[in-house]
Every structure is written in C-alpha cells, then in structure tokens.
Image (cartoon, rainbow, N blue to C red; front, top):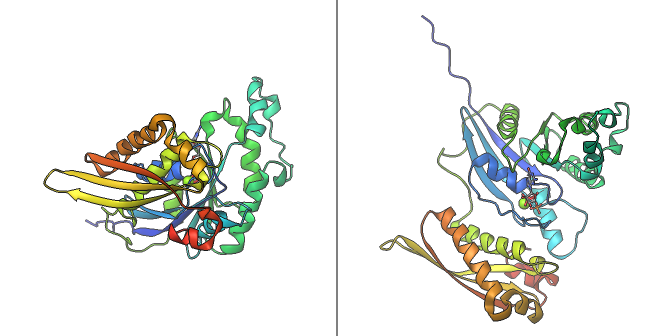
Length: 328
Ligand SMILES: Nc1nc2c(ncn2[C@@H]2O[C@H](COP(=O)(O)OP(=O)(O)OP(=O)(O)O)[C@@H](O)[C@H]2O)c(=O)[nH]1
Ligand SMILES: [Mg+2]
C-alpha cells in the first residue's frame, strides 16, 4: 500500500495595497477573523503597515495591511504613502484592492433587462478604471517586478446586479492581473475564494511564523489605534487627520484580570481640542466609551480607559512633530 505524500507547505508575504477607503483593512480583518486593523468611513484611516498571519491548511499567508496610496506627498501623507510603497518590497504577492465604482454601476443597476450592462468588450481598459486606480497600479508596477498581482474588487454588496462587474473585470484582465476575485469584505462574501487564490501564488516552503502568531504589533499599538478609530468615526473635517494618540500607561493587572490604560489624544490647535472634548465633555466621553469596548474585545478582558486631550501645535506640519508620534 502506498501512502501519498502530504502536499507541500506554502508560505509568503502578501501586501494589501490600493487607494484609500476601498476596504483594505476591512478585508484584512475578514481574512484573519479578528478585528485588528481599524476601519472608518474616512479615507486615510490606516497610517502604518500592520502584519497579520493567516495559516490555512498547508499555506501560511503573511498579510500586510498598508495605508492608501495616493498622490499627495506632503506632511503625514508622505509618511503614509512611503509606508505603503516600501511594504511592497520583497513581497511574494500583491493583493490590489479596488471597489465597485458607483458611477459605473448605479445607473446600470437600475436597468433590469440587462441591456445597459453589456460589457464593451473592446473598450480600452482605461475607460473602466478609476483614475486613482491607474495611478496606484503604476506606482505598484514601478516597485514590484516579479510578484503576481491579485485583484479584489470589493463592496459588491452594493451592486443590485453582479453583471455590472463584467466590464470592470474585462478591463482589469487586460492589465495583466494574475487573478480577479469580486468580494464583499463587509459581508465575508468571496473572501475564502480570494484566500485560496492568494495561497496558490505563494512559493513552496516552510511556514514563516508559529501557527498561533497573529501579528507583529504590540497591544499598546492597537489600543492607540482603537482610540484613533473612534476619533475618525465620531468627528469630521480636519480633526481626524490632526489626531495622534499616545499611550502613557498600559498596566496589565494580573491579580484582577484587567488592564488600565491612560492615553492622551493630541490635536493641532486649541479649537480642535475644544471640539474633541465637546460641550460638557460629552464628545470625549462617547469616544472613550466606544474605544474602551473595542479594546476590551480585542484584549479579551475588562479595560479601564482614561483619556486626555492635548495640543501639539501643528504637529503634522513639522518633521519633529511627526517624529514625536512615530510618523516620520
Ligand atoms: N458596502 C461595503 N462597505 C465596505 C466594504 N468593505 C469596507 N467597507 C467600508 O468602506 C470604508 C473604508 O473601509 P476601510 O477598511 O477602512 O478601507 P481602507 O482601504 O483600509 O482605507 P484606508 O486605510 O483609509 O486606506 C468603511 O466605511 C468600511 O465599512 C464592503 O465590502 N462593502
Ligand atoms: Mg485601512
């Protein structure tokens, strides 16, 4: 009786890249099944690369969430775009994320006879591509020569009729994607198929990390991020982008089984501080309540959170200001 050999293990790094707000971090969380990366409706939510390990069957994917790639290269944007682009160096695969474009799909969705969604098969790819995606693709190609590009077209839950995807898929196919997978990261639709496509691109070899390893970042980092997430979700205009969070105390009290965290939220101007605190301290209280619950969920234990709001004058505008918060 012959025993067939076990399939070879595969392992490698997959950078998740794309323009801001297309759902890269939502997708990372969906793949690993843990809310690790912060998510908000505001573009430029993610500022740092975040590594997360997904071991599935014989394959291990080392996923790297990255900030959105865009044209602006001043201040904090410069740091974020550099962080995204340098994350591409040496990866085994690039997972390029885009989203269904409402301008391409909404009008077509309203048609029920399907006529208006017929793919203009001979159309130039440029006609269906979002201009920012074209920029992102060029920036990736400049950096990545050999690694395959797998495209995830996200937010398909927004489509009434999935046939509206056909022209988009056609356009992208002409641009040399290794694979194209329509998904809804939010509804976990197509995510398993995407993981299988990614795993198949990875080189054969031993796993790079122990199976129980989730991320390379410390709990303090995620605590600061979850506070920043609430600022992004609960404030508008310039405040989200003027915010940095510094964890001043992070005490695991083993005897009580809880964690005490004291954090300071920095903004750039006194007026922003006043908005963040809100009338009677209501705004900062709401931010604290939500952030505490999110941190407790991630750490799996009760959390006591004290928040203060301080001003670091125009910190995003100077190299030393950005350096102070680790963004330089
Ligand atoms: N409808 C829908 N919304 C989604 C989906 N995936 C993400 N979103 C929403 O899109 C917004 C942006 O999601 P993020 O995951 O923060 O996007 P990102 O690409 O990481 O953004 P940056 O970090 O700013 O580059 C959030 O409001 C998400 O809830 C999806 O599959 N369907
Ligand atoms: Mg993100």
